[in-house]
Length: 256
Length: 261
Image (tube, rainbow over all chains, first blue to last red; front, side, top):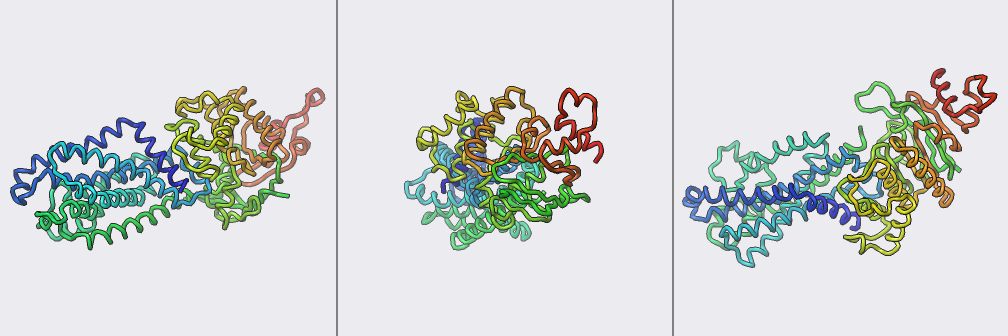
């Protein structure tokens, strides 16, 4: 646990000292909620009868947490380039602890961003009860952990940061489009629907929306599968991706 | 009693047709200074990487402090201190933060979020190590502001925090000015006297190898000579009239050995 906390703290300290990254990470989701949410009010809002800014907020919150932890895993590539990963690898700490510490650190970073997104959403008129806020906490944590494991598995074998950025964009942008981050998607062509179900972010978005809209009108409009499907999928994906990521991370470092 | 035993070690990198390390065997006695010499690309860093568990060997057997590399890597890592050829510090953290992560990962101290909350013994140990190496006033500065010499000193402080049985130094003084080199070696000599630390050194500064107990010369992945510096000089220093006035150096013998090997 001490090793886990030490690695996690390092990532948090680095973010807090990197003001440019911090500002961009907070500004991007706010622009999505305020900009796209307002624009979609005249279309999505009228069709669904729901407040489009609120719908966008729930999706963007999940996507922000997922993307932030996933993108944070690029630091394993940065560490490799700077040779700091060698220092970590010669310590008597298991590979699983090393990668778990990374995921935990990026989770704390993402939750900080998530807190900022919630604060700005409230300013932009999203109405949220105390009960809804509490209900969001579990799914928010799940989004972070799934994003971290996804980022680890996706980037563990990547040789440098430039490639990591390209791979990351290739894997994230389709998920933003196909998982209904800004507005729920209905009536997709069959092949796109199958592709959308294969995207990890879809389950994170649904889990967050189902917690926010639970017991409220509009639940059936924004949710397609629901927690009985989302929870086991998110849990299973997290465990599988973390284990695969840890294995690839170790393999990449030791078999040159 | 050997603390490092290497038997038939082979490493071939992916896609290569040659062995970077080609069936080498040697032992390092406990408490000694062992020096692995060789030109660039000879296999020194590959050997060190395998012995420090960061690279998987293709074949061969390695035992360090009684632990088998194939089965007890975690136990081996506890016994090692390493200063890599390329600096492996986090440049965005302060010097003290780099050391603190190391100390916590080795289980020396519990994790605490700040220096002031760390146990008193940790703070005293840091102050003592840093003052010996002359970086006490820079502990709170971010490492990216450090000179090359200061970074090397910091890495050595970090590597010695957990009092390793074997300290691997892979070209530790490359790029350092003579004053920094001298102060590093003074500190290393003191550490060896105090704690009996075995030092496994690779270097291109042959003057540093003069005080080694054993020198091994590796060329194209194979060991071509081994022995005490005096023995190697006796076997390989070419005859020159000036030896009547000054003794041949290890560098004279080494260069002649490479020419004739």
